[in-house]
Each structure stands twice: as C-alpha cells, then as structure tokens.
Image 1 (cartoon, rainbow, N blue to C red):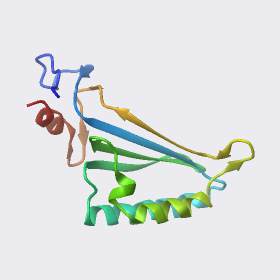
Image 2: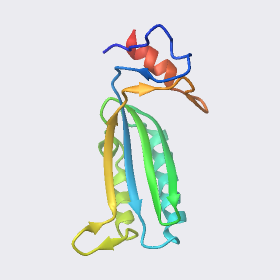
Image 3: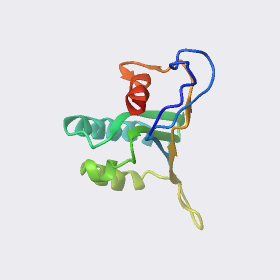
Length: 142
C-alpha cells in the first residue's frame, strides 16, 4: 500500500489522504451506574499492563475515553486488522466482568457496541506523547 502525501510530507495544515493498513477500533460501554466507571478504568489499565508485557500483533496505541460518568470508549489503533481478543487472553475475562456493569434494556440488550475504521486521512498535527503516527504512515508508504 502507498501513502498519498500530495507533496506535503504531512507537515502542511489541512486534510491529507492516506492509503495505509492502519485501523482504528472503538468500543462503547454504557454503564448501569456511574460507580462502575472507576472499576472499568481499573480493568482497562490491568488489561493494558498485560498487553504491554506481551503485545498483540499490530497494536500501536490505545486509550480509555470518558463520554460521561455512565459511558466510556475503548479506542485503539492497529497496524492491520485488530486482534486484541486473540492476542491478550485476559481480554476474555475482562470482557466477561464488564457485562455485569452494562446498562441493559429489554428488547435492545446490553449497551455495548464496537466499530472498526480504516484510516483514510490525517491532519498535520499528529502529536500524541511518544506515539509517532506520522512515522508509521511514512513507513507504510515507502
């Protein structure tokens, strides 16, 4: 796959189309009560620690994002298709524990959904601590 940089090298302001095998995964957890947010974060951090000890193939970065006291998102960026469940066995245990905290509505089920998105464009300001997305995009293009 190639990167379409249009001569900008991702330094110019604006939207930059890219063609790279990078996927973003987003999972939303709607909680029954705000008291479950801290427990969810603790489980996320434990799972992240386990993943750091034996990183699953392709995991580039992840984050715990809070929408409101009763809803949060797991956001992760992958090289290729996400493989978290297979790559980190503790993921299954953490997921099972999370189901008891989820809001549930008869006829709709638990308030939980997940999506996967292919990276198709970026802006020039790709700063995120020590995560070098600009470098990854360049690496996949050359």
